[in-house]
Amino acid sequence: MFISSSEFKQQFIPVNGIINARDLGGYIMQDGRRLRDGAFIRAAHLADATDEDLQYLSSIPIAKVIDFRKDIEMNGKTDRMVPGAEYIRLEIDASGKIVSQATEDEKRLFTGSKQFDVKKFMVMAAFNPMAQKIAQLMYPNLTNDPECQKQFSLFFRLILETENGAILYHCTQGKDRTGFASALILAALGADRDTIVADFDATNRVYEEDVRQCCQNVCLMGGKEKEIATVKSFLGANTDNFIKALDRIDREYGSIEAYLKGPIGLTDNDILTLKERYLE
Image (cartoon, rainbow, N blue to C red; front, side, top):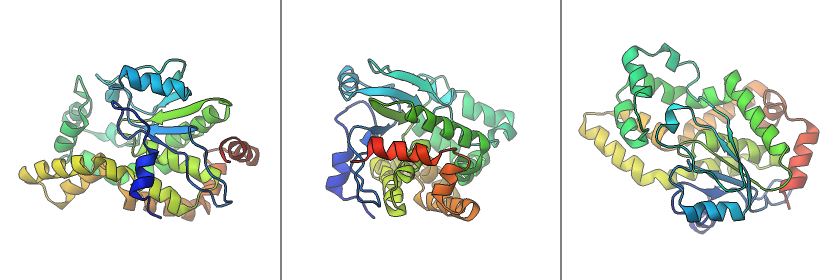
């Protein structure tokens, strides 16, 4: 499945200061029902949201804002609050235990900035062996790391307890952790794999120019295939690796539905509740 240009544009909500802000509504599930609009908003951080953006989000209305970012990512990029919404930190570390193995210099690379600038960080990280390793293992960590599984399980508990209002969830760029959260929501509601992959991959159309420019800068600094791949994984969404992560879930758990009922902890009744609430 490929999201057409018109469908892709329709997903975007009318905000100016929030990148990659899309309504998950509109997808058709395998049973023929449609995910209703205004239920789930996936986005990048809200630090640069305008007053008008916040007013719009409040009008949806947003019941909960769930922030997946780590402390370092929030340096100089604290979310602006949506009026009437509950703000919840639910930190998900896609690097797993890798950063704990970093040298002191590498730790300064990852944690030494007073304000997190993802584009500058990517150019530096492209040449760093630790960052290259994180880029390779990010999606396996998201799916298999027990701490990540625990946090995604809590994410669904927060959704299930929210009977009214929309859920806005985000990380820094709204692509990897947010993309995987979206995949789990769509899977729980009964989307097929093509729909899940298409939604994940659509982020690359948002960041296409950023990836091109960053790769160009890395090449000018002598970067080769490995460095370019690192940039594409961090600054874009690595759809091939995402598909491999889904394949691994199928191998280890039998299906993504079994994964949801296993480490993510959803019951049949939870899934029925989600479908009754969000599908039309």
